[in-house]
Length: 314
Length: 266
Image (cartoon, rainbow over all chains, first blue to last red; front, side, top):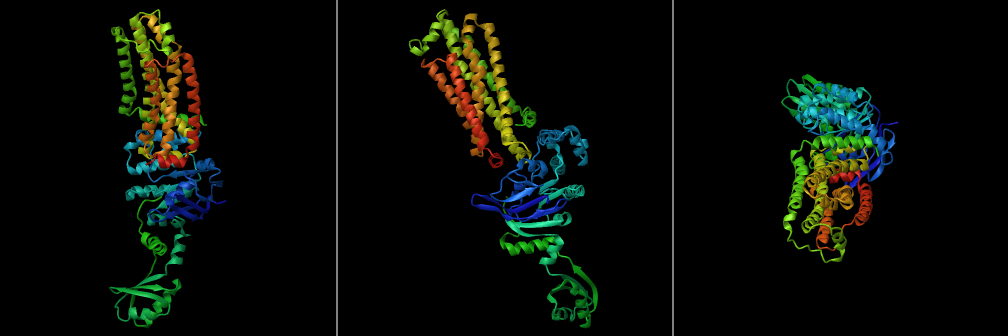
């Protein structure tokens, strides 16, 4: 049974459709990234899956429990990291965690809280006020809070937003270690590099699902393979490449050609063609398109004006 | 209802609230100021011997007059003033509870903690119960504390005849039954209002409207049109309890997680 399964999940706010006909399946132990510009419906999706807001239509099962009918069980099965940590600044880190442990019905509150403070590297700051914590520590504390009741599924909304690179890495490492412990993670992020690094699959949404696959598969499916060729001299090179039947496009910059191929296995034929045309090749390198390029390509095709993302997410 | 979850949230809120000095000062200081005014009036009432009792010839006040036939004129004035002012003390739990409840909601908004809170298995009814108890318990405790203080001071300063007339069954019913019920009604109305408005202060103002009937009672008594006898107070308590239960049920019914997220958040 999948960890999360949605079927045509839709949410409207008055006349505004925030999420439309979203159908995705997240397998157990998987990290799936939710990508999309601001206002694409990422936060609304996470809120629906956390049983915080009901869908307008469609169905979903979270940890096998039906959304809307077994919301209490859904909340027990899910840990959520909201966009802002939402901590009680005037209470200690320990007190923050104790409250949530009690609300979640954790059996041994004191030892569970100690264990998670220790796990997230906050053991020596447990009695400090949450308000005195740095951004990264707050995020770690919020992550500990989401984990207290040992949920099988974690819904993380922009977990590294606003963190400096070092702290973002600490949080990312925590996410990876959670996956290694078998947890399923649905991760909403703007950070495409982060998604590429962490996620087994990514769901690109723009109100509705635009693409859903492994980053590598999306790259292969959506972007033509490209090769960078550095030449000793540029004479004949570009023209020879353009003349080859499997070459789609060629750009030239300072002795380096960037060649877009029709097929990914055409690189040896390209090299042969160039050599036969008299070109002296110094280096050939396959260009691996980034997830960002894939994302921009998909979003531009889907909705040219919002590929960059503006406005508030809902 | 899971009492453990309610208790956890109440204790959390109190741990935060006690750190708000302004709130503590307002919630505790103002009631004590009110009771000081009450005592001032009570102790200086005998000086107002020449006061014309407005209710003396009006039929509803007759039982009071008969009950107080044995008292001297000064004592009767004192009894009248003490009884009238007592209604003002009923405003105390309303003021204190609404101030605390509003702060409690604003505190959640400020911390942006509603979303993680609502993602736990806590039910809407439990959340509303916790938020009501957070305010209701200290509000009532403060009211009873200032009433106790007033009783101690008055017991030391007033003749026994006056004291027995003022602190009769009706007074005790007002303080120990009507006051909590009025406070609960104000709170419930405030909570329901917060489902319809995104501003907690507006909700507070709506909750505070329950003070108006109290003031109306005060005016009616002063005008001699009504006398709050124990029987009448008990009947009022029964009506208030019914209204409280009705409003509470309505509050739980109309509140949804999404309402709290969207209305209490902005």
